[in-house]
Length: 316
Image (cartoon, rainbow, N blue to C red; front, top):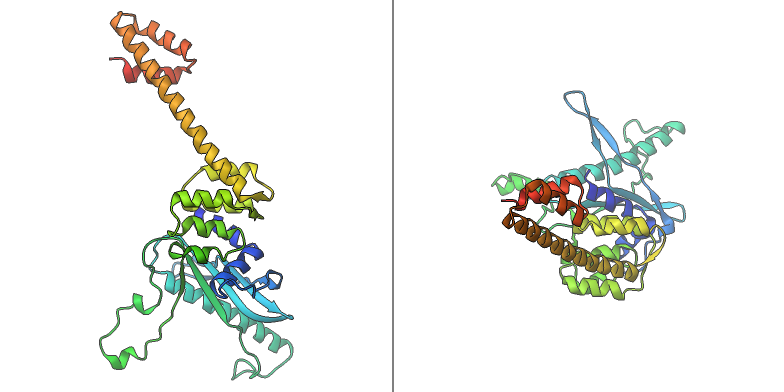
């Protein structure tokens, strides 16, 4: 599991963010799934490989929706950052494991109650809870969204109709419209708006600066933004935003950091030009290299290794 996965998994593990994603994508923004009804559903498992080593099967996030004490739906959310053709098979395994865990629970209950299910496996009234997995895709490529797309399908129609397909619920975040991103209410709205191609970079910055939204999980949100944008400034901000923060405050800090960075770059360039001119002038006056080195080091307060670097770069 890579750093981007870890960042987004931490963010989505918060019940309010998890529920917000389901409500936005499945229920078109209606507040149907209540975060208070969510409970983690652990289905991580391992299988033995031919060489005797164990192969892990780990879900990113999986929660059960409990309504009046009854399990209504088991939701899974998987984060996919890069194009992976094995995803359909992985998700099929994740969902199977969620069903298998339910069967094991029923069978343990039947054994405890001495129910006779030797042939039928389960009692007639023992029904499994549906498992629904959403794939949040952060990339640009067309991720395979079903099993048959990854099979070498035979030409005979008579055979093809017996091949079971397994469709994925791939949510391509970059294709979201502004209207869709506006439906998010949790910290994930920042992620969606920064990813959606319907916003250009200036619009994204303006949107963030005008937002009065309070981030409940600023560090996890900033780490996720750093992972998906490759902008390390978010990591610096995460150290100073450990409590609830307004998105507009973070946007202002980002803009200031960019401005300060530009100032520093300008000062660095000015200093380097000065060092170059000084070295060239000393050469024209036939000043010894050792004396020039000392003058450059003293005037610009450079450490020995940095002064040596400039001398090697500009002393001809």
